[in-house]
Structure formats: structure tokens, C-alpha cells
Length: 622
Image (cartoon, rainbow, N blue to C red; front, side, top):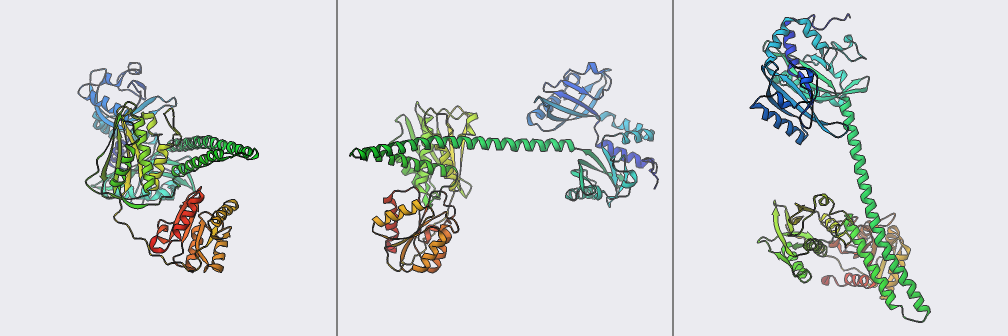
């Protein structure tokens, strides 16, 4: 098949229609301006020399009243970093005024400076240009062939009937008559087919991005503008003006990768800060514990009483347990024992306690809403949230002020608690970090208060946010889901057998031995299992004797909850006490309604015994 020159088999009217479609998608004048709107580059001029234009501002060549619209369009493009279009009028050196349509595309140079590309079209010359192009088929052919874009024409079956040029690896014989589908990646074919079909059916222009495709390989990325070619009142062909955007896509990919690397670096920085804060606090507590235990040993060797040293060590372990619970809350790993409460009453009770502790120069206000809002909350944990927010607020008012707590609905499914203060506000650079662990702008404090509050709120399915202009106070908002009603607990069956036998399953040997010792001293008989599998085996063998099971939540082979389910098959209504030093997320939301309780490690011996006694009470007293 012999090659032929483009356009030699097309009549003049057809070529004119084709050229009009091409020129409708191609702008004529390209310039580059800096942030001060000065012209730094121009591909060509109308009548002036380059030296008369370069370095001057674009408005120097414009006439009123269009000058202000052009300046506004350019400034809007810089402000929004989005392309803007406008029309203006310019004065040539001869004094002739032309109408120019301009598209401004902002970008940044490698140094970071702002600049913009201006693609301008001389609207007044369109008709004259069309007439000139009609007179010179050769001129039109040269223009089309030398366009930087690939220009193609397809029929309704998406077969290529004309191209201005081909890619280096293809010949015109391979392209003409072939379906466009062969040169598009399978992933991009659907969009291309849809836009081309719309051009044929509705004479509608469009655009799509696609990958060039050859021999099963992606060759490049292209942006394709689609324009209908009309003939005798209907769309006969569709023109595809294809721009290679491979470099842009690569730049976007590089930007995404850079952003991901930055995000990872920020996460690592946050983890490093968290780890450093934890290590600092725990090392201090370990120092207190280790030092006091050493003093206690010395006191015993000297025949004295180690009571004071042991009390100091005990207080340090309590502080360590508190710190651990805070960390679990921050990591959204804390288990909440939610119950249906009326939010206004809970806040009112908390405010009464806070009024005893806040400074006298701080006015604390809470006006309960006329509507009652019921939510599912772990009341003690939410009291801690409210306390942390109020403490943070009055710290921001060293000279006094007003601390107001408000309730308001958000839609029909949520309620918002607003904690507002008239303090110094939160600086803009700190607003995004105030919920980070160990971040604080105060001279004293651990920086955990707001992080703990955010973690507890998240564990309740809510959101904690902050607002401030950095000058006149701040507002912290707690958004919580509403609940309609509570479900009554399911009845439990009184366990059979000797109520003094307890099965303890714990994979940590030292902890299991300690639990057995505590319960043994309290007068109970203890069966021990090192994991969930062994616990189920013991229960199958001696279940009729066992009144209560104590199960660690996280154990190898079989966790505590699934071990409980196996045992419950043998004894419906089995009572259980779950213990955990980590997250209790393995437990379902309704575990409490199935005769079970949760005890968080570390716990005091008396707390363990109290929970056991409560679970062993008759059903009607629970």
C-alpha cells in the first residue's frame, strides 16, 4: 500500500471544516509572566519588537475597561493556583485595538517562584485567518503537519481515516484504516469510546486522558481533545487533538512519591516524639520503684520497717498504670464500657465537681439544653475528657475569664459539646498539633491531656476538634453519636456446682501465679491454664465444679473470648472476668450483657477480689 500526502484525497470544503475544528482547539500566542505580571517570554508578537514587550507588565498594552478584568483574572489564577480565562483588548504599536482571549495557567519554577503561562488567541483575526487559509491548501497542510500535537480523524467505528503525522515507531500505512482501540490501553478505552460517541451523537466536544499502547506495552500518556467535524448538517468524523503529557504525569508521580515520603517522615517524627516521651516518663517511674525497693531491702536487713518505701513504689506503679491507660487512649486501644446516659446530666455533675477546683477568677457556665440528649458513654472516661478540656481552657486564662460549656444538636444523629474559653487562643502553627502526644506549649505539664481526650472520644465513635483565631479564645468541640434506647441485659442462668472453684487462664506465668495467689488467699480454689486451649480442656473435664472463669483477652493459640465461647456452649450463662493489659478490641460490644466483666491490668489485689465476689453473687443481685 503506497503512502500519500495528507489531504490530497479530500476536497477543499472538507479540509476547511477540518482546519476550523483544529483551530478551535489551538490557541495562537504563548507568553510567560512572573508574579508581578511582567512578561518574561513571548513566542511571537503582533507588531512590536520583543525588546518593547519583554520586562513590561501585561496591563501596559491593554485598554480600559478590560484592563481591570485581565489583572483580576491573573491574580485569581495565582491565588487559586487554577487556570483562569478572560478576554481583554490590547493596543498595537500602530494604535489598532485587538480583542484577545487568554487562558492563564499558574505554575512554579524549580526555585519555587510563581509564574504563569498565558495562551492567548486573537479573536478579531479568526474570520480573516479562515479566509486566508481557504486560499492556500498548501499553507494549511504545512500548519497541520508541523503542529506539535498528533491530530487524527476517526469515523463512527473509531477507525483512523487521517493523521497529520505518526509516532516514530509507526508508519502511516499501519495507522490509516486501523482502529483507534489498538493504540489505547485497555484501561483507557472506555473513556475514549464514551467521549467519541458523545461527539458523534451530540456534536459535543470533550476531552480524556489515556495511555498510548503498542504490543502490550504502555508507550506514553496523552491528553486528547475531541471535536466533531460537521458536514452537510451532521457529524461525519471526529477530530482527536492529542498532546503528549508523559512528562507531566511523571512529574505528578514524583510529586506523589515525595508527598508520601514526607508523610512517612512526619509519622516517624511523631513516633519518635511519642517513644521519647514514654521512655522519659517510664524511666523516671522505674527509677522511683527500683530505688525504693532497694531502700526497702536495706530497711529489712537493718531490722526496720520498709512501709514508707513500699508506699512510694506503689504510688509509682499507680502512676505507671495511669500513663499506660493514657497511651492506650491515645492509640484508640482503650476499651470503653459504654452505658446509655443523658449527656446534660453527666456534664452537670462533672461541672459541679470542677467548680470546686477551678480558680476563682474563672467563671464556669453550663446551661443545660432544653432537649435531653442520650448517648452511649463510659461515664468516668468522659468525665476525664471534660476535665482535660476544662483544665486546658482555664490554663489559657491566667488572668481569668469565662469558661462556657454548651450543648447543641448536629443533624438528627449527633450532639456536640462545645467548651469555649475567652483565653489567649491557640496559635495557627499549633492548632494542627494540639492533639499530638507530648506536645505542649506550657512550661509545665506532660502534653498528654488533649491527646488522651481525643483518643477517648474516638473510642466512643466521636470526633474532637479545635477552633481558634489565635487571639480571642478557643472552642473545642466533642461530636458524639446519639442513641435511641438501651437494650436490657440478657438474663443469666445461675451456674451449677461449687461456687468457690475458679479457672484462671493466663499465658504469662508470673501473672498467672500472682492471680492464683491472690484468689487462694481470699479462700478460693484455683485451677490454672497457660492458654485458651488448655482452659477449654480443663472446663470440659471439670466444668461442673467451676463457678467462674478468669481469662486473659490476648493469648496464643486461642484468645480469651473464643475460649469463653467454647465453654459457654457447655454451660450457657457462664460467668467470666476478662483481663487485659493491652486492647480489649477482641471483645464484642455486648460482652457485658453475657455475664462477663472486664478488668484492666495492672489491678490491685483487692480490686480483683471485689470483681470476683461481685460476679459470684446471686443473679438477681448483679
